[in-house]
Image (cartoon, rainbow, N blue to C red; front, side, top):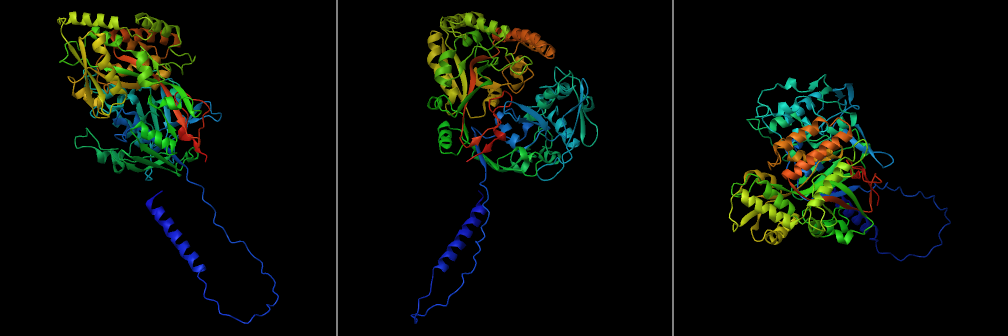
Length: 615
């Protein structure tokens, strides 16, 4: 409630109080001679008019564990940024719940209708006539042409540009345009060669490199990188060399066009979004206001949830035990796999980039204990391909359930120590370390220091580091010691690039939604094309096999599974990362929150954005 509204209510209450006091202040009575009153006829009474009661404001309370760094969707890889953008901006299409609560479908948002297929490689869409920014400025084909060209700008090198060029669909020449002037794409390319063309003031044509279906086409343009930007405001925010921008740095340098307006941004504290009643899809959204609290500490989140100031809560390993049998608890699988990224460019470590050293670290991860004691109620895993991978394929068969996925799991189990199934094998870890020592001609009494990066404040990364500090000297018979390298929250990616000699492995978590359709896509984050993750652990044969998977992505699912298995085996042998835990999502929902979905739907979730408040 705003301060102005509170002030008006207080003033009204004071006036009512004064009126009530005056009504009770009767004058002193003067004695009179008693008389018999004349008979009177009671006057008809009319009930006093009553003011209609306004319905209570429906406020949805949610949270982020850390604030967003920008509202410029094309410029950041942080998942948190998608939260305010999804509420306060619009995309061409939007996924909404089915009436039966068992699935979802796409409807036009900024687009006037569903995309129109011209031929196998050509699609067109038209911007709806009433599309506009929250300040009333129109949104048209020029808006999107400016947005697309800016996202792919080869000089700006936007972190999320790849998600326009090549995600659910591959736009003709977009990737080559984005990377022109680099070693792999040295030739210059004109914008006119990219498969994005303006047809008229409201219509744009997209040309893809391979045939796609309508769902993939719509999904591609709902990625947070593809939210439109306001051309005039974006131009004002550009630096003089046009390499950087302040667009989205605060609410004075950003504007939205979504079902909610971003009214207030108290950094590291609170976001307030207010329903935009003029939005063309306003009837799909029931909350009058959304409040997003920035709450880094789990104990604080628990307190807010228990006091009714949060409508959902995702417990961590320290709190899940108290809620595991709570009837409000729901669980569902995830595309997220927690892993350690490996630095192969640490010149201060004589074994940096050595494959035997990487295998030693892989087999020294006590995954069963990590999953139980540090993550709590999650699943240990020795592979990076998640349990949801392939669930949205035509057959619905996940990769892990297929014979190809099972064969790789059996291989990992064969590597494991007795009683283990996820690759943990202390004896094998030591053997590989000794091979690495021999590769580097290190003396047997050499003590290697492994620097483990994690963010400040302890957390999961800190606990993992403490466990490695305790276990690895024993596993490696005194030849390895572990040192923490602590960085500020949100700075891991920057420090990976800026301080290559300060770390050897870093705890990370990533999920790839496209893997639900194409299982091999989980490894995209470890290819050389994904420059936002500077680990450089890809190998030539890994890159070649990823390209082989891309080449068959429109083939039958059996072929995709076969090629994915080859990639997974190479990734494990070359150790492009060290997977440790498969995430399982647990979430509590407040009783007053009415969700539109009867079940968790991969790629859509519970549809809490379309929920309702029922007090």
